[in-house]
Image (tube, rainbow, N blue to C red; front, side):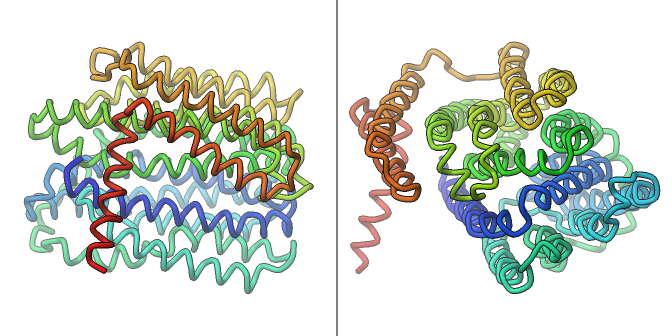
Length: 485
């Protein structure tokens, strides 16, 4: 990785780790106050709002990262592109709020708590003014990280002061929006330092509509099996089932957030390499990203299976015991989504092969929709988890099959086997710890430490390149830091 990629990765990792730590602090608190039904209502409404955000964005966020990365060294072209995309997004936002109004007037499940739904819908506006895609495209990860940490800290303080009982669900809705999107106000204000506003008369925002629509199709089919589970559970089984499913998916989302830190950094860089025809460097970074994802997500998936009961009881409480099996079923989506994310978003998409990604995700969406209809009525949240897992495996397998000619990954690399064997050894170590029958927190901490040590030692013995690269840089940083003392 080049120097700037390392710096960006560190900042984005800090951003991602804090985004993981804050829910680890807040979710155990909120889940015990709102209970499965309250958490279920919030997640049900949020899933619907996410669809509206998706429809009113038309693929702009992902499309815009690629476009701003292309022109980041040319202020005039960058200004034209950014202002055109921003203008288009504002126009589409009004369509989104029209949908919000129609739903509030026609859907009985939303009529039951219109104020909460309207609070959550504010994220449509914040999403537009945030221009997160611009800062990712120009790789300004330092600003993104500092802003996010400050906003999240203030939001958590708000949560603990104002959300005290089940009746405070509206205030929790405010927290859900503010904790993620409030910082977008600063994004919009800061944007002026990057732009040349003399180009305003040259803008043609609708020229971005057609290419963004391709990404919209991709995002739509992805969203079908990301948000559809909660929506279908809400309509077919009720908010309590959504709450159990939310407790399980909260943990997998937290861990997936950790693995996505690399992808957020790599997309603009890989897009820029393709734009400059630097295919050898593209292939090298693509292989590193794939091996890195393999090395991280495989042991995480297995660890979640083994520690699911402790994780659910610690983070959500005894009222969520029903979610333990759901989490165990979902655990391997960490590996499947991590791998498909690298292949689709970091490798195929920068090459302009989004059609392959769309076809692959369409397969997953179809699988998920069909299995949800079959499994949810009988198995509730467990059925939704099975549908999600099978869908994600289908996406990854289809992507590898259809897109193999454009994926420069060395699948026969012996180091990939290292991660499988290392994960199995880690699992044996964790199982032996279970024999001592400790309390939840000590068991989790010791299992984590022993698991990491066993996995790392095996990779060290096998002289694994990803381990050596990561450990070597960490040691160098510590050494140089100590030299300066």
